[in-house]
Image 1 (cartoon, rainbow, N blue to C red):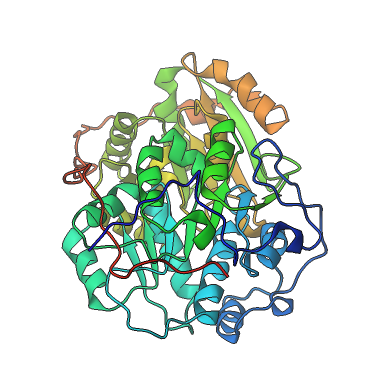
Image 2: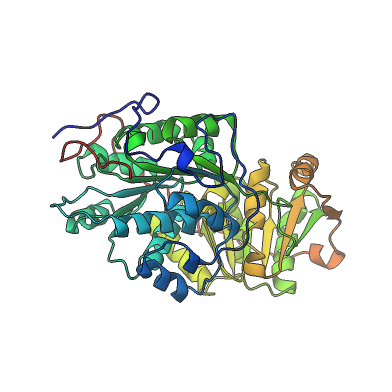
Length: 465
């Protein structure tokens, strides 16, 4: 068995790859300096797109008739086989956009010859476990009538169970985090030289979390960029993101979804000016006096979330922790319980909270102000979803109040900064706090690392259509 390696920058063009001039009503470029903004277009019905009946039935079951802006603008190109770079925030429908592209392509181009286990036809890379699990869940919903096998490979969960899923039958779509995928490639359990479609989601977050070396290695294990379709999505187009997209995509169309405001109008945003010592009483009173039943509380560090969870539990509040310290299977159960209403308060770090989509979150509380403005936008986006109203309350003290002007500049508006009402600062009952009651445990380390990856079992790779 040989491992196919290739240099993405110098990969030769393929005669069968779509020619740039074939693109309708848009300009394509592989120059990172010149991203293309596709202008506003009329609302597009899914039924108007060249989609297989299996996808249309699934979309109908999900209750969707019209595409979101990112879907309507990008699908007409990606369904024709073109590479795409998309800039869109979470909650804009980008996940469905690339999943519909992947599923439609696999249905329209079935494999007739013998297939082998561990050889996915499509690969989706995500920076966090929660986001990967959410993408896989969405894929299963959209592939409800497609008879496609979706396998999720993420760290912190049962390796052997994932290996059995890979070896059970040929896999069509693998959704993975970079570290765990490399583990499987190193052990010759997964082979990427037959990948026809590659999706890289939240590329800017991949950069922030230091995953790009792993992603580069994974990309080199797939066919050349001229022999696969590549879709890359990012909330921001930094210079690094654009340079990577130029290396990994072939004559892409670039779609940017501009938001009128960085944060939604359906979210009431306010900042309470407090001292550090007032934060915990403020949070406790806010939850109990307002009888909040579904609230997400964000803090910047894992130790902050652990201590906060322990305090809230000691005061008999229905609370759970979501951070990298919590074993993955427990994190999944915690999120399911929160969605089901069995937990009222979910305390999370930004990384663990990434990719969480829960309907009915009434309040988001920033126990500490985020140091990155995009994290603020992401936190706020957990409430006020699907047209519902929501409330965001940030606690600003002497340690992080200096971040307010930067947040205001990023969202293009002034934040309502006030002192909390006196009743919300009332002393709370004194109880004994047992630290460690949150159930957090050190996250398992992924085994090994480095070394050569797996290879393909058949020579060559699929040609781009």
